[in-house]
Amino acid sequence: MSTVLDIPAHEAHVVRVFAVIDGAAPLSDAEVIAALGAGGDLCEDEIELFDLGDLGTMPLSDYLAEGHGIARADLDPMRGQIDGLAGRVLILPSRAFGGAAMALRVGRGLRLVARFEEDVVPVRFDPLPAGGAAGSVSPPAKARDGKGPARLAVIGFFAGLAVLAGIVAWLAGAR
Image (tube, rainbow, N blue to C red; front, side, top):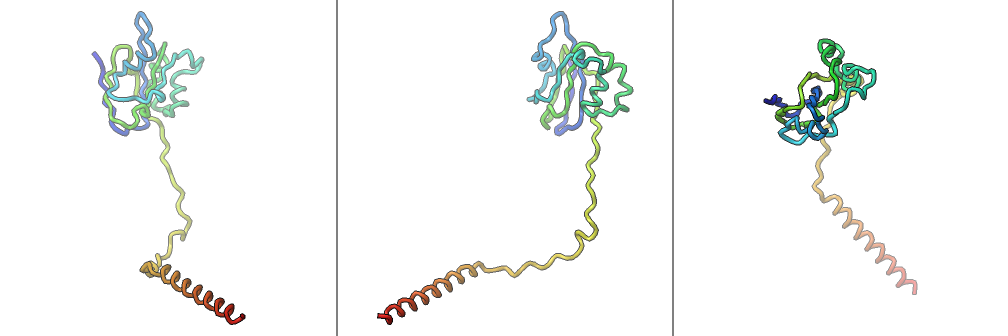
C-alpha cells in the first residue's frame, strides 16, 4: 500500500521529511527517489538524501531550523521523533516540484515523518519620501504629425542648393 500526497501547483515554502526504510539490502539513491512515486518530473538537485551520521553531533531538528528556515516553535512538538531517526533521510522541499501540481505515490522504502512550512519573513517596502508622488501630471505635449523631420530635410536641401548655386555663380563671375 502506498501513501498518496497531492502537491498543489505553485506550492512554496514547504519541506517534507521522509525516513528511508532499508530492508535486507539498502536501497540505492535512485531507488529511494523512485519510491517517491512522483507523477511528474522532480528537480532532483533540490532533493536532499543523506545519512544522519553525516550531521555529526547536530540533531536533525537543528539542521531543519538552520538549513531550511523551519521555526523552532514548529519543530518543538516533533523534536523527539525527528531527532530519534536513524539511518538515511530524504528532505523534499517544494522547490523540487518546479511549481507543477503533482501526485506522489510514496511506496515501500519511504515513510513520511513530517511536513513543515518554512518561516518566511514577509517582504516590507519603505514608504516613498514625503511629497515624492505629489503634484499633477502635465498634459501630453501636442502630438506631431510626423512631417516635422521631413520638412526640415526639404528646407536643408533647398538651403544647400542655394549655397551651391551661389558658389557656382561666384566662381563663374571670378573668371
